[in-house]
Structures are given as C-alpha cells and as structure tokens.
Amino acid sequence: MSFEPLASDFYSYESALLSDREKDALAALRAWLESDVRPIANEYWERAEFPTQVVKPLAEHGALAFAWDETRPFENSAVFRGFVALELARVDASIGTFVGVQNGLATGSLAVAGSAEQRREWIPKLASGEVVGAFGLTEPLSGSDSARGLRTTARREGDDWVLNGEKRWIGNATWSDITIIWAKDEADGQVKGFIVPTSTPGYEATKIEGKISLRMVQNADITLTDVRVPESLRLQNANSFRDTAAVLRQTRAEVAWAAVGTAIGAYEAAVAYAKRREQFGRAIGSHQLVQDLLVKCLGNITASLGMVVRVSQMLDAGQQRDEHSALAKAYATSAMRETVAWAREVCGGNGIVLDYDVARFFADAEALYSYEGTREMNTLIVGRAITGEAAFV
Image (cartoon, rainbow, N blue to C red; front, side, top):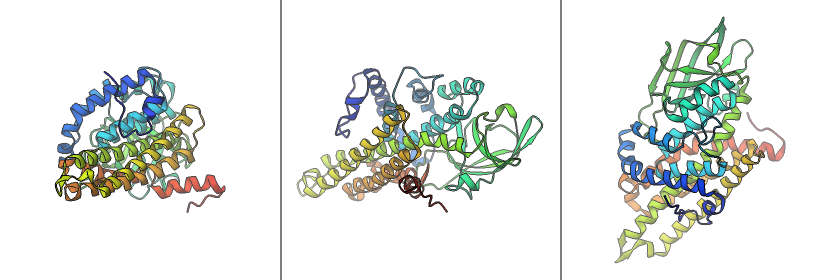
C-alpha cells in the first residue's frame, strides 16, 4: 500500500522521520480506519456503544503490539508509535482511547511493573486482543491526588491479597477480561498493582451513562468487595506510586499525540466542509474570515506536532522526563481545545450535528483535555522543573 502523507502534516514530519517499513504499516492502518471505522463512527458514538468488531483488526495491524519486546512485529520508533496514536484519534478519538487503555495503560503496567513471567503470560494475549484490559487508578474521591489520596486497600492474607474500594472513569471496564487495580497496601502504605480477572467474586463494574464525550468508550464505576487475588497476580515490580507514575509517564506523551490527531480530525472535516458549503454564491472556503480560522487551526496543529515529535525522539534517546511529557500534554490538549472550537465555528450551525463529523471531535476533545492529568496538574509538574519548588497542595 502506497504511503500518502497527510496534508495536515504541514512540515512533513511523517515523510522526513519515518522509515519505509513504518510508512507502510501506517498506510495500511490508515486505509483500514478510513474504510472500516470512519463510516460507523458517528453511529456507534450516538448509541454510546463500542464496536467490538474492531479489536481483532487493530491487533492484526499491530496497533496493540508495536511497543513491546514480546510482540513487536518490527523495529519501530516512538515517533512512529506517536503517529499511530495520532492516526487513530484523527479518525475517532474513542478508538484511539481504547487502544491507549489496552496498549498503553493495561499492557504498559505489565511491561513496566510485571515480572518476566507475567510479561510472557499476559502481554501477547493483550497484544492479540484475546484479552481486553482496563486500568483502575482513578477513584470517586481521588483523581489528581492519586499519589497521596488513594483509598482502595490491599491486605495480605497468606498467599492471597484482599482488595476493597471503588474506582471511577475506568475505560473498557464494562467488558474487559482483566483490570489492573492500583491499591494501597495496608501494611506499609505503599501503592501496589494487581492483575484482577473481572470474573473474580466481589468485582462489579457499572457503566457510566450520560456522557457527552468519548461516548463509544465504555467507562465504568468499579466496586471491589473482598476481592481475592493470589500473590502471583500482584505486579511483582510495583512497589510504590513511583512505579504507577512510570506507566503514566509513557502514556501521557501518547495522549498529547492523540490530542493532535483529534485536532487534525476536526480541522480536516472543517476544510472539507469549507470547500463544499456555498454562501453568497461561492464556497465559504473562499472567504477571508474562514481561511483565517483554518490557518489558525493549522498553526496550532503544526506547533503541537513539533512538540510531540521531539518528546518522542527524547523517549527513544532515553532523555524524556516527567516534565517533558507533561508540557506536551498540557500544551497539545489546550491547543486541541481551541482548534476544535474554531473548526466547529467554520461549520456554523452544522457544526453541532454529527453529519459533518466536527461535532464528534469537538465533544471528544473535552475528555482528552482532562484525562491522564489535567492541564493544571501537568503545569505544576513543569513548574516544579522550572523553579525547583513543588507547588502541589
């Protein structure tokens, strides 16, 4: 399949930085997303259902496997993996979020904090889509303060651990096979991670209804009542919240990439609309004010793309720190929020209905703006790096 660079990649990062093998893989994924996902996205979004039939093709295209030694189909860069996240979100942010949870958070927890045996057992199953995973960190009363405020507890009893608590906003959790649950050890007060099969007695997941953003993603409230898991399902290298943070460090940059993809999706839909919508006897794309909005969108996209490319290059070089991914996430999601609003403005009243796609990107942007660390929390991480002073409450 021939590789055609995106017109919205205005400075040609794809063409300049990706290998031929990476371009081929990205082209194949892009073609499948356009043929099989874009036509059904609005329908499933409106029904608030996830198209489970996409899981196997996502796995076949390597979208669930590219990052991991156990499953990587070919050598690839963090920049390439970023473009995969962008491509998914450019077509639909809910599909991109599913992959982010499955591949980055659930599989990433095993990759960062699992033993060699746990990695061998679970990562191939997650990469193939045989097992669907979720990531249980956020709680009803603990989001931004998870490092200190985690209330879910774990108590050791012989060869088992007993988990009690609640989780909220857990993506994939209504239909996942396993959920990585983060809980505070009653004995030492440290946060530990557990692979919890969702069939375990005492585990209950309830779908969160009434969402206006990422409606395809099946977010759940989870209740854990004396849930017993064996020591063999404790992540053997998760001994404190620092290990949880190590998982989030690698996924936060991918959320920034997804934000760029979401902005591009809205921008491309606005460009298509501006070319075909006529007012005053000509296409609105020929009007100065409309062109101004589109140029501002493209400027935000191009600036954000330059930032996320560099952060991924730093990851490949082993130079990325928390503040680098935090700045990318804070900036790219803020620019995305501005961009999708301008794209909706281009479409006027038609920008609030699903028919023209912009409305879906406009709504979905709100969730990306908040999850994996709000703009304010990421600002504090960068502010600490700048001043040497922690301003966290």
